[in-house]
Length: 399
Image (cartoon, rainbow, N blue to C red; front, side):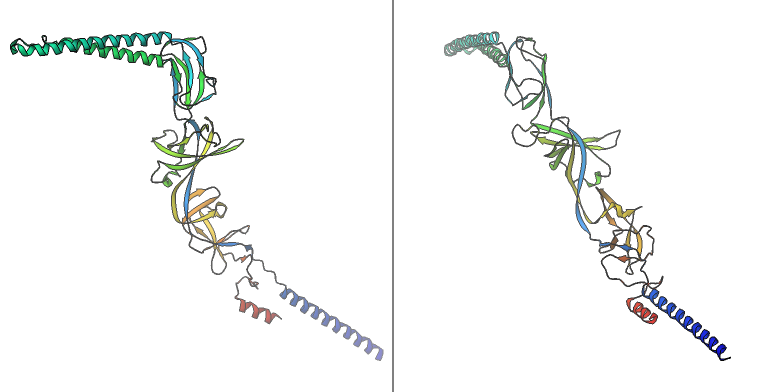
């Protein structure tokens, strides 16, 4: 009997100890679980919005081309006797350089003959002037009715004067023809083609070469519709940067010279012209920029004020995510007035010091509560947001 009671008592003790142990383990586990609650709010970084004034940079592209091209022709006929060493295709010559010469003997002879005619006409004029003076003195002794223009030799004097002028004009033409036997460059030039050589007879008016003016180059470039509202009020004399991005990057400065004054019927774009001084660097040490090079043209447009510069990646469907005072996300519609590179410029929808979400959660939603990277924030006990004092009280009660 006692043995049975002892066995029963022992079993009850073991059972009680087991139940107590289970209760203790469960309580410990619940306490640990309560203490180790995980903050599941996504982490984001934010940036306070700040309004700026921004100088719009307008970019376009075009091809470098000559300011002018000249088809050179001989002004006199004759045999070519010499030409400049650089008077070859691709050669560079300076203003006034002698490109080639034509045999000048007959033109020198024409000058001498014209000079003799001028001397003869001057002599005739002097003689007629003297006779007119004599007639004028003698006319004083005669009745006025007998003194005529013919008696005073006025017609003869006018004829002698006309003969002198005619001889002088022939001399002027002869000198010009003689000068035209030496053909010079009208400007600093690139020789595009040459169709004459030593010993060749050239005829007056026949094209012998083609030259491009290298004292100045031009780039005609289009202005897109979205850039047109930001053009400066005064286009002429606006500075521009010309960049060639070939094997070697070349940067030159230019001046916008004019608007072509028409809209392209195919593209509906306007076109501007920028000029580059001395593109082949005959007068300076600047890098050369050759005709036919495709370049980028950059220049400053209008200044837009009180706008916000935002990375394009942060704007989706013309909305941007911001945080409210409770660190909850919501999307704000914005108005983008300008796109440049990787940025949007926004004039409406963002306020000064709005907290812009820079790193979005994978699935952002309106009202989603987040924590800000780098800020100490309280843990959240449940789906409702608690103030720090409420959280401390909740943790104290759980313990």
